[in-house]
Length: 126
Image (cartoon, rainbow, N blue to C red):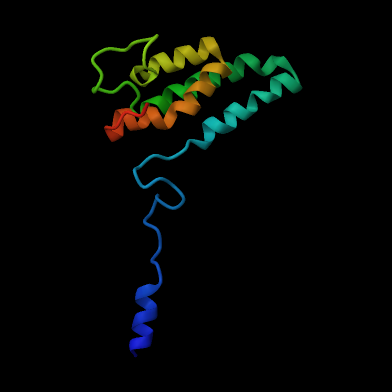
């Protein structure tokens, strides 16, 4: 009987919903943004008529994702365009992606976790 109890207590339980394979701090990667970034290869390889649609789709996706990670939250007094990018508001991210295309989107994707931590987690990464 004790052998059964011991084997049951040593087996790990299931992961809580929403935390399997992710960071336990609440941060999760946005696969849609990554797929849209990969879709930027389509106009380069195939046809450029999709480029305006892709730029608009990217800008809207970055805007809504920046809202979800609370970019430019209440912790910062003012937004600085040439300073720290964690202070940028979602509208700024969307507009910058509309103007700068894949370059700004790539910058956003690489710094997304830092933006999340600075605005939600309370710890600013350097």
